[in-house]
Image (cartoon, rainbow, N blue to C red; front, side, top):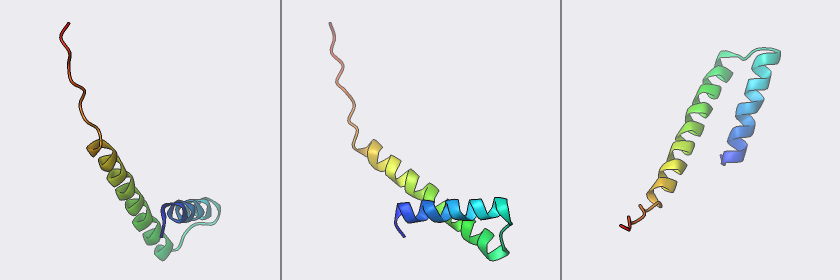
Length: 60
């Protein structure tokens, strides 16, 4: 599942939870999807940080 599909499904479950409630299976799915999304965000952030190099300090 790509990131866009993941977000769409999380939003779909959220909307359903507010309108009519979720089954236990849907609650478990929502929890797993949220955790997966958080892991994706963490991994993307780590990748961005690993590409950053510190600037050299120049003494004036």
